[in-house]
Image (cartoon, rainbow, N blue to C red):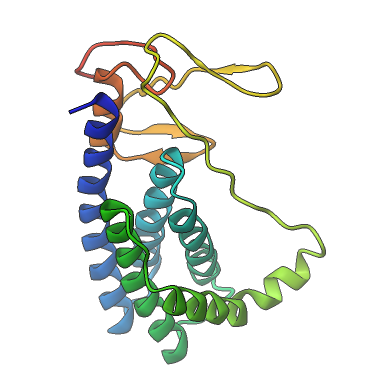
Length: 202
């Protein structure tokens, strides 16, 4: 098994844990517990999946998770209220996110109609925020990694070089957390930028 495939397998293992946490949190919200800690935990699960998926250029998964977390962010900031309609959309979104993860694992296509319908439903909840933001539109761009050339850093078109070096329980790139198991596996395999280091982190 290649180092890159090993890291990819670890990503999917992390996704299973994060999806369990997401399901539990959404069930709690459906039961009327939309307190800060619960919503934050759900948001972090989606955000962590998005961040790690971006590393592997899973663009469809990243795009859906980005819209999903935008609605969750509005909920945790009390811009949105946990109405029955919103709760139904969130629970459906959790199922679709799980389907997208499974599709990425199996290299198949998710139910595009279900994805499109949920993305359309998101617009009803974030429409006001988008209007307040004016014409500025933010888009998420995935940064891929390659283990093909150990020792070679990732060079951007601007000429700058980025070295990804995990530290502690979480590794952060642009404030996006990468789950600990994925971080440890990346580091022991030589790092995202080819910077080889010890298998155990401090």
